[in-house]
Amino acid sequence: MTLDIFFDRYLITIHAIVVAIGLVLYVTAARALLQVTDTFLGRPSLSPPFVLAIAGSVAAKKHVPESVGTFPTDGGTFVVLLVGVVVIVGALTFLPAVALGPIVEHLQMYGGKVY
Image 1: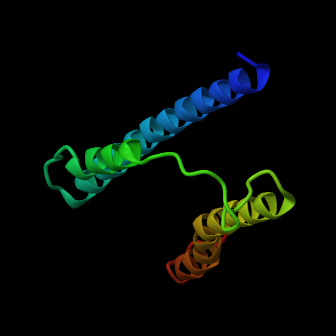
Image 2: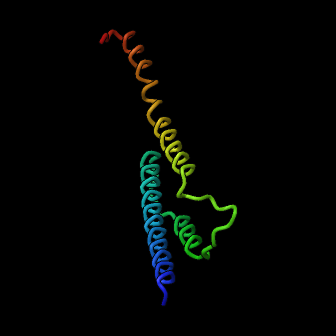
Image 3: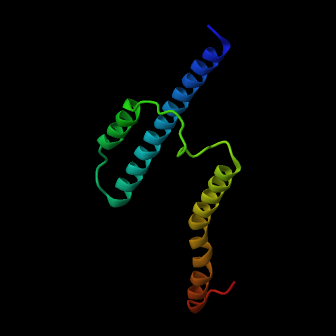
């Protein structure tokens, strides 16, 4: 057994473990989101069978080798896109509260509270 084959098998094993951890985190997040949504809407919580279907579909797929159309995840473009998405999602989560603060304060001013 050459060293290259050993490392290829090792990397495939690591990749499979990372994918499995990602699926576990996705299922956990989906269940938590479903539970919070059900609690907010006042309906009983049901287990999501669609999450199991997605996990089974992803697990059954074959490994596809890299091609010309594969987006590389080890370059600067991927890092810029990832950071950009995180910043945009964080801003869209945080900015509504920042925008509503002055509006609420103005409405409270009409109610007699002055800060």
